[in-house]
Length: 501
Image: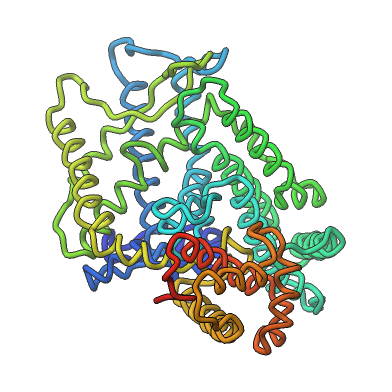
């Protein structure tokens, strides 16, 4: 185990392979994503990163697992016959002793779920996806999750190859740096990784290859589990949207690169533990994302501390986490879910009050930090700028950058648009606003935003600046969006100004 010293929790222990995961570039970029977005415009010290957050979530999740194991041990060791001897899940039952062993075996997977639960975030993703709805695809969309997972696995296995292969293939680094390498390139990376594993088994520590195998299997289980995170917390009614979500999930699971790596390298589970089962393993997802979970228990403490607010809870709450067999509305089978014990041998009023304290901290954070008017105003300005630039989805080049680089790229994009807009303004410089609208109509050729090629051709004829950047579709899309919005304004106000401030 390796020790990492943190401000909130002191010395926290991480497995060496967990740190190997954290050292990959796709995870290191999380240092450059602020946990609270523009909250630092109100609370100047609230500049902590998502990297800090998911380290904290991992430590909180581990303590929850420890609390669950403790609770099950107490039930197993009761002198009187225990109130329950087995738990229903799906169409089966699992004895309490076997469930305790299953929870312990899933502990590394829970820690990996905690480390990866926010990996799909891009710069200002909550602002652009949840608040302003500029981007419709969110960070927990299965396709986006799969894209990030695949980048992570390529970087991880490359780091293993780099460390143990004295004759490293120089063609591998360009493959790893690509967001979507071809199948041929991926196969080349896998072949090199397989040869490296064989070399480790022969020339290095004999058990090291087995440790790598076990870690990769747990990592694959964690990734599959995260595809079901939202599914656990929604009542099932067979709606069309849920069917679409299931199709998207199955497609993403079929595209997981780590599954291909395990198959091609002949890596199979050594612990004989079952694959992820939503009914049996729902508790692993509850630990990370439910009403009271590791995610909330970290940000309730961390975000309030960094904002200078003093909301906290008593860590004694971890002693009262346990499991329950639960059948939700609209579901056919029971699931093993996480719960808090309000009753032990008596009514635990301290647990009740602590639950209220945690939920109150969550509410106050939302009221005073997350939805602070100034923070929301700054977010609205960013959302409007991104919308007016015609950026409609999270591009692949957003996946590897942080907040500051994103803002710099956006500023550069705006400056180039303004230069072209200035030339368009000269081209359409007529006195009559109605005639000006006609000029823009001629320029856009159509109000249909899909006709980018025609629009780009028209811009090339009008703008010398655009000729230099004519091969950049994002610039074309942005200018078309600006012209379309300007046209709407002119049609509504005959006395409007072209590209009015």
